Image (cartoon, rainbow, N blue to C red; front, side, top):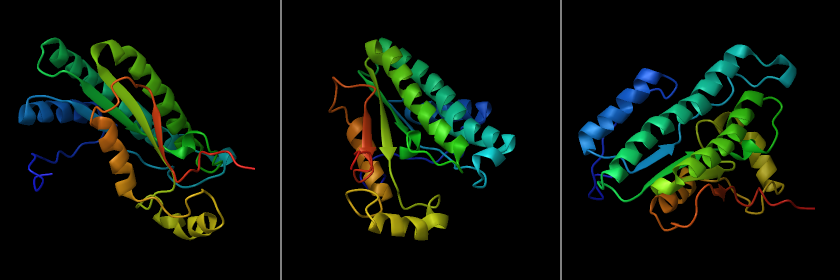
Length: 210
C-alpha cells in the first residue's frame, strides 16, 4: 500500500473481543481521521473436523465468536461512524464487504459450526445492506470457493483430486489475489445501484450442473 503511494498501518486485534473491536476503530480514526471501508475478512475453521454428532460447544463458541459475532458488532461500530461522517459531509459514501464462503450453502457435516457462520453472514449482509442503503453505505458479500491458504493447506491433497475431477468448471485452486480483486472492485464504488449482492469467486462452483 505504501509502495503504491498510500498510507497503511497494522493494528493487532481479535474481532471476537469487544475491547479490541473498539480499539481497532479508534486507532483507525486517530490515524486516518475517517473510515470509508470495512472488510470483514477474519475467520477461522472448526476447531478439529468432527462429525456433526460429535461437534463440541467449545468449537462452536470459538468459531461463532470470530466468524459471526465479531464481524456483526464490528460492522455495527464502523457503520455508526460511517453514518456520522456522511451526515457531517466528511465523506460521500462508504462500503462494507463481508467475506464468506461456499460453505454458506455447501454442506460439510464435519464442519457444522463453520458452515452455519457463513450461512448467517449472508443474512447479515442483507440486513446491513437494507439498513444502511439510505445513508449511501453499500454492503456486499464475496463468496470464495477453494482458495489456497493456511486454512486449506491440511486438505490440499483432497482438493487437488476434487478439482482435477471437475469440482468447479474452472479447474484450478483459487488464489488470495482472486478474492482481493473482487473486494477491491466492490470497494471502488463502481456499483452505486447495487447493494446486498454476492460476488462468487469460486471458479464457477456455484453453478448447478447435471
